[in-house]
Amino acid sequence: MRLESRVVPSALLPEAARVVVQLPPSWTEAPSRRYPVLYFLHDGFGDERVLADKGVAALLDGEMAAGRLPEMLVVSPRGVGTWFTDAENGGVRYGAFLDTELVPWVDASFRTLPRRTARAAAGISMGGYGAVRWGLRSPGLFGVTGGLSPAIQQLSRRSARDLPFFIRPAFRRVFGEGGTTDGYRRHDLASILLDSPGLANRAPELLLRCGTEDKYLLADVSSFFHKLFGTLGGRSELVLEPGGHDWGYWRSSFVPFASDLASRLDRAEDVP
Image (tube, rainbow, N blue to C red; front, side):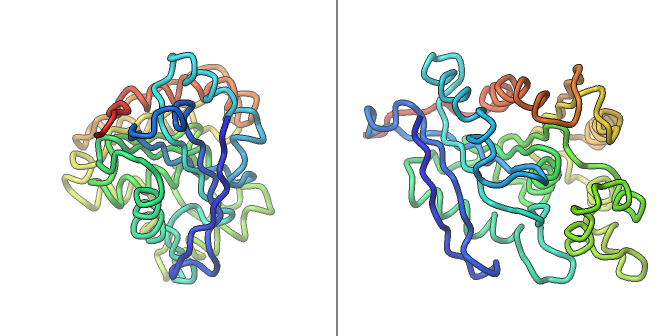
């Protein structure tokens, strides 16, 4: 398994962004081959190394080497406390970084297939919110987006109170305090869809996957969002299965989740 730790310069973040790039098994042996890309956004307790640290990167590498999972690059940026979107106060423009700095940097630095049909964005929990938000913000960038136990519940003061206490400050920094700023509504995914007629129809296909024992009731949230997205003209698939909001569930479900995403993307191809 080959992982590369890189630093991406940014004019939109307080400092350069750390990124881990997992290269596919045939990367060295097939120097003329170009690959699709999965952008992975980590959970609220993780960072850019979480797939490697939890053993998931090794699982993906094994499945790709065995031919059971299409080969692709997996790009994992560090977004601790950012919710992978632009902060309400304008201090950290993480969403703009993803669009205008990270994707062009990846396409310039690695042998990618630089097109919509060869890009996916997906994340876990906080990163699931970030991936779905990314797809709505830039509907022409991805062929598919996905959330595993995605934190896409309605944004409100109550949703902040339900979070672990050490995540609440980051939530308020990103989304504001509500009230007169109306920041929650501007960042709430259901509100974004309802306020933008036709957006669901233009957005990438959406894959949602969640454990039915999720302590934040995200299985119910995912079911609601799946129905809303489809009602508004979007393409959506929902998988509910036994599991909680933890790495025991995420580790067991990540390979089939990644396989579902990869099946919607162009395959790697040799380019003369």
